[in-house]
Amino acid sequence: MRVPSFPPLHVITDDRPGRDVLATVTAALSAGAPCIQVRTKHGRDRDRLTLARAVVERCREASATCIVNDRIDLALAADADGVHLGADDLPVAVARRLVATRLVGGTARDPAQARRLVAEGADYLGVGPVHATTTKDGLPAPLGLTGLRQVVQAVDVPVVAIAGITVARVAEVVEAGARGIAVIGAVADADDPATATAALLDALADAGTADGA
Image (cartoon, rainbow, N blue to C red; front, side, top):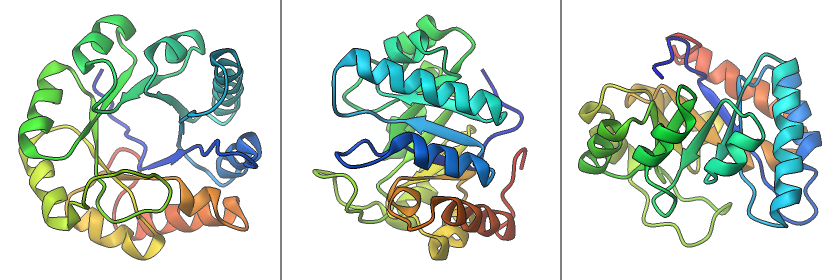
């Protein structure tokens, strides 16, 4: 599936204990977030599916895209718009067969991996970590803008910059060629997730990235 209008901001859910995922999702959507990625690392599969379905419903109401991270089965069961797969998840080629025309994203760290994922059928790539982040543990060393730029130049699908992306860093990742950004803490950790979302969207617009750019 090649998407003519690609969402420049992907807000990823944070389901760590004490987090109100749906409240954050609702706030982000109210500010115009064009895409929510459902990332669930805790709880039973039944509970993860319930959450994914609730996020899909809210995204439908807001005319936003909903992507489920890591789990093809949950993406299909929740009727999400797509699935995003990391290096330890099922191969992109398998997802491409199973989800048909839904979006398939893959995570890449270098040009060779990026080209392989696109050949397997990835519609877009998440590239990172671009910068250090405290949201996820055990990540490899940051790629920096040079690493991001190298992947962008290697493929012809949209690239989303991941990790450590703040309002102040939006312009530089867009200048490096990213078509969008994916954030967790920049929204989930904000005192006002709606205001934080709006600020990121404004920064993306100022940098020249918008739907369909």
